[in-house]
Image 1 (cartoon, helix red, strand yellow):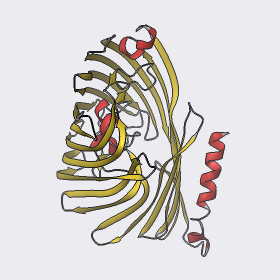
Image 2: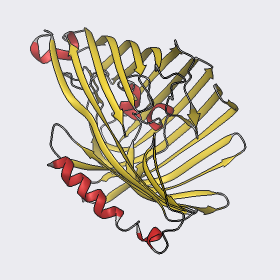
Image 3: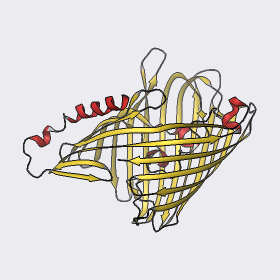
Image 4: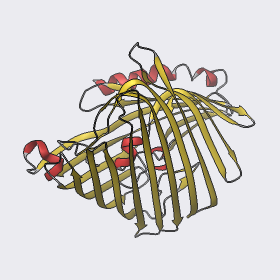
Length: 391
């Protein structure tokens, strides 16, 4: 029923975009591609698509500390999303995307924005969209090489917020910056953040990429609390082993991120470092938390990770028999300061099979080590499986 309501919502919203094609049906094209169903006429188009990801996790130790570290398991629809994307002409476009939450049975707007491309210096986006921070965060969950993003990315990268941003390109450089709504202070007044990212890609050709990036965000917390809670890259785990001390009253949080990546045919390497500097409003509880990851990917088949506009994109197998990818990642999240919190390290080994551009099967083995004053279970092992379909 929830999915039906979501589909109906998008169908109603699409009615506002269809009139751009209704005046004259000459030259209307209908195309079913890897990005969904697309109907276009001249510079106007409307596109429908979505994804679902079905996950199963088997885990023990620190990932199941609430059950004395015994083995446990869980399954879920990790993401179930449908979207509509519309172009009114060459300058204007809009996107609405809804996520159907399997656990809470609630719909959630992931994206809801309007974008204008008519300025010579770049594009302006208004509405709910991703703040430009970090390579892994800005690579769609459909295209990341591991089942979950790293602990560092989940802990620090802001994700989607309501705001206004400007993005553009100058040679090998790309830039994005914006103002976003962060939270509400004690009086119910909104607080804001300034977030920006610059990337430099000196090498960019088919199957060959060298990428560098710098991200920054200054976030006003309005005396709200700040805490890091992570599942150590196992989304359905029954505990959150990487938990920092709760800072009850925070003025601002300053984020910074460094990133680098390279693609050399079938081989790709990717790494990021991020830090959060928490400035307490009172009590002298300022803190600094940080994390990093290093990831390598290698295709056993004649394929590669595609790159576009500062992030990685969809793998399109070169053979009708599909593509095979091996992945390994080491990640670290240091959430210790003021003699409290935990430090967590993960090692992940994975294998991905791309049956085609729409269907992917993934398997990750994750070994976790947790240290800190309040840690009861220090080690964990997990096996995560995913079946993914993009339509």
